[in-house]
Amino acid sequence: MTSGTIRPGRNTGTKTDKIKVLHVVGKMHPGGIETLLMNLYRNTDRDRYEYHFAVQTEEDAFYDDEIRALGGTIVRQPHPQKGLRRFRAAFENNVRRYGPYDAVHSHIFGFSGYVLKLAENLGIPVRISHSHNTHDSRRTSLARKIYRAYMRRLILRHSTAMLGCSRAACQSLFGTDCWRDGRVRVFPNAIQLSPYESLPAKREELRRRLGAEDPTAPLFGHIGRFSEQKNHAFLIEAFAAFAAKRPDARLVLVGDGPLRASIERTVQERGLAKQVSFLGLRKDVPEILGALDGFVLPSLYEGLGIVLIEAQAAGVPCLVSDRVPEEADLKLGMVDKLPLEAPAERWAEGMSKLAAAASPDWAAVRDALIRHEYDITGSVRRLERVYAGGSFD
Image (cartoon, rainbow, N blue to C red):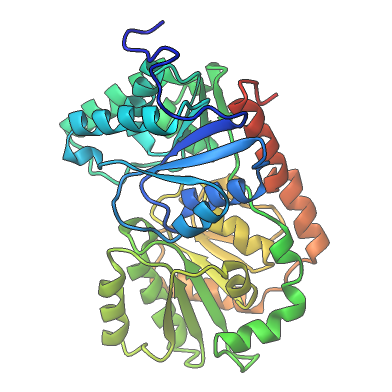
């Protein structure tokens, strides 16, 4: 037994017949990680599995109320930047208070190494490191290189399973030769299919809700956090080039984040305020997607791009950057790729093609989603087996 392990009797939490899982995240605001976790939680067998979410914020987040309504628990943690000693003390106290846990599933990229080290010291048997991206969004420096190497070493030492939403995401966190390690698996970011089945029949109604009543006016959309990764500034530049030829076109932006105010100013300065709408955080993402003529994702990098899976599920033609992993394309002819280096005018041409593209029928889309393992039902069952101490296979 590892030194520092909490032995039976030292944990003051309540042991139930349920398998108790602690998810370690930043905060439960809409994003790729959080969308996956909520899809999993809504579809898991909550009579057998109990989810807790260790968040690194004191602020309430978008999904907190729904988590509690489903029977989950929000566990508050200080951010690691406030000091490792403080983080460690809080983590250990929370495990004693809310545990014992059967599994810890960490979603915080490199820092998962430290989390899983603590989890092993606390005697938690199942420890999962999950890579959701291909980059940690930090500029590379000598100190950052040392940090990444050290955290990777901790991940490799203390994980019982290592998951990634794509091959690129796995290699980014676990190393380019990670496939020789039997603990590594690609775990696709799956979605619940039922909300998308009826969208084609409601298209006109959905467009009216967004104020797009003219069926001939192109309506484009983007869903994502307002951060450097999502490249909103270039999206606005490309839309401006398209709108110069089609002044009736509209763009809806769903999400929030640190760069939202800056992008709102850019829209005003370009005279696009009547054509670009900021919808904020929304719970009706499938319905918004179902109203679109095209979805545009010019990301600088993506672990997978779960929103691209959602857009295809809604039958929406998509234009994405060449940084989006190939696994996110259902191979139904709905996804066009362009290099980020291409000028805005070329992206505007790509948007013109989206507006004229036809969508495949729902049956073909559903079959492709299931074939590529993007149906949440199968994903939940595989993960439940791992939480219970079994294997994916």
